[in-house]
Amino acid sequence: MQFLHDLWVRLRALGRRFSPPQFLLLGFGSYALLGTLLLALPFAQTGSIGWIDNLFVAVSAMSTTGLSTVSTGDDYTWFGQAAILVLFQLGGIGYMTLSSFVILARKQKLGQGRESVLKAQFALPQDFQIRLFVRQVVLFTLIVETLGAVALLIEFQAAGEEAPVWSALFHSISAFCTAGFSLHNNSLEAYRANPVVNATIAGLCYAGGIGFIVLQDAWLCLRVRGRKLTFTSRVILAMTLAVLLLGTPLLFFLDPWIASLPPGEGLMAAAFQVMTASSTAGFNTVPIGQLGAASLLLLSMVMVIGASPSGTGGGVKTTSVSALVAVVLGTLRGTGRVTLGRNEIPTPRVHTAVTNVTLYLTTLFLGLFALGLARHEITLSLAFEAASALGTVGLSMGETGNLNSAGKLIVTVLMFLGRVGPLTAGLAFLGRRAQGTAPEPTQPGDLTV
Image (cartoon, rainbow, N blue to C red; front, side):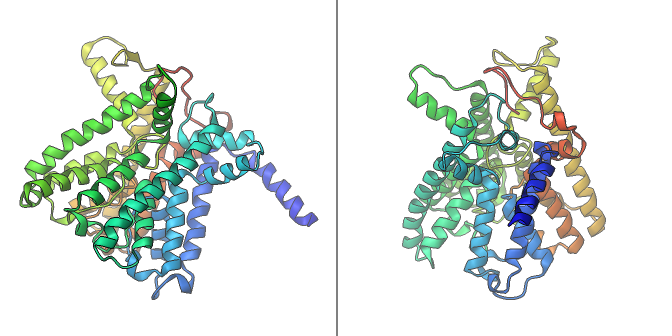
């Protein structure tokens, strides 16, 4: 016992030397390693799956991506599927969130280091009430996922689906965590014309993708008379709605395959695919490989923009894109100020947004370059795969199953970096201990990026 105590003391002392971004990197890495070991167990598989494929699936689940080189429903047993579910549940709400909730439930205090990591993970301001936030994240997640599972269960039972309870629970958690994992080999194509399934999955994906800051902000507005949404929440909701309203008609009118569907079904399919790319969920109700080149380019752009800070999705983030739009408009107007509406974005926030987008696009280019070297060619499907992996989306034109070992490892790295974030990874490797996180907003009107 003394040995274990001494080991724990040494580990805690070593932990103090790490910055919050380094903790995030190590935490998600340990989850990926543990997930790989669980999926490699004989009773987790129905056949024999190689270690590269298990690593690929584990990182895909932990990063809430959804790409897979094997069939989740056919190649993994119930235990393997449950391990995947736990991985994307933990990856979706953050690897320290549940443990922090347990600490708070036992009426113990969170350490300063743990609070710093949580704030870095969710991109929260330094003065944010982290204890209240953790409780709300966990409780909101459980409530929403339960309601989603009940709604899906009714539809899956009516459709005669095998093991409808497990399928409903699996898809509900996968949707809220924007993981995109499905027990069906064709994702949700069988439910393309089902408005309840489409609406339920979309609601779950948006609830996870828009970020917990917005959800908490909206809840406070309902409880406190006269309170209004913060600037960050308004930007996130406006950008999310703009992407949906602009992308849906473009996909509906311009894609030949979707245009061949009945009008109502085609419109619902177009909206669903824009939603799943925007929230970085990765479900599909149409065969992605059948879409036209222009549609694929449109979805790639939406995947790069991605979801929002403090949520379960990936991508550049809507707030970073909004900050860059403000920079462009300010330059064109010659005002010398970076503003969105009546709110001026502080210079540190602009620097963070520019750095985030630059690192993201650089990582995407390097990843695609490496895939091109591994495959001796660069195709549209390969570029789409790279954008989907780094954005932790999970949409694929069918390229995942054609990857060689080198390609699988490259996509695995892209998925991992997409979940951690290129900016956080850069801070983990290059940032000094005292500057472990990006500058935090200090005023209510600041934009969180």
